Length: 479
Figure 1 (spheres, rainbow, N blue to C red):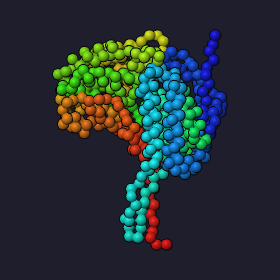
Figure 2: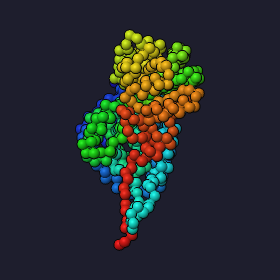
Figure 3: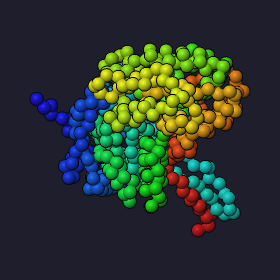
């Protein structure tokens, strides 16, 4: 017997629609490896329709007051809370994530982030007015940029959608959002929730593949393109957007160094690093997956971390004892497996290093030691439940190793020496430095990296300002 697949649809100009040419792609639950839905494979006609709807809705949405936009965002946050169980179920089906952890670790922060940007809507500040030329008064206006083309990733489909639409709508922009082709279900549900609250055309969702995203970025209507994804995708977006000088917001890969000094609390460091490295199957740009340990405690640390890995459980979404679920898709499983298969002879797999089961895309919590700075697995993002460990001799070498990659998103330092922690936080070339912790985020603080990790900030007032433009207005006293 063939199970009928659920049909997901685009949301354009206030209504759900199939792709104009009727094309679809199957959506697979990574916990089972089986298809559960079809999603539109949107083409140029769908992109044109969504952009036209967003452009038509922009003038009226732009002219709403900050207080009006705040009320709308607060209604969206309330609706997310009211329909939390539906969102959790859709996200788990999308990604295979544990239901309990999605409920506790994702939905509450998402709701808080929407409410933060609801408040930020009323703080669109410019510098104070002043007379900088005799007989003239200058003021600065902050305005929305216009239509925003936004592409969300598959590792946190719901939360990254929030990080994109909430500041954009709060600032007075209209949105065309595309989820990953492997994780559209929760975003389509978000469209249903938001669509019942905002005017038609203000928020649109189109599903599809890379070609769909490319068509969005290349489209002449958007004033801004925002993407969370791989470095390769980000570079392609930047290149495409340059052709018509679109503003670009990029949150790309990461290879976070976790620097553990000899005076650190080893037990606490191991416990926290294991969680920060394996949470969400390591599919997090900020994951604690590249550990640098002082040579004097290296062996002790590796032994403890290997035990922590062995004690970490992966499994089905309804199992409340698991820390993480499957990798997102078959290609990602192949990528992670490839990194382990290609390890150099001097590397040692201390724990894991293999697939778990033959159903779905599960991979064991893995620890690899004995690595050198130029090894592939050190330089490139694995995006899986794999923690590497290197040793260093002193602070100078720790910084050399930590900064010696092309990514620069997040990092952490583990030490009881305050002065050392301050020195390291100054010289670590990363957009975030945690001290004696790793991975917590709050709505009030910015998230974003340097180098090939991209540019622009998510969250915080800085992330909100990214969705605005600045205009100088000068008035003469005469006339």
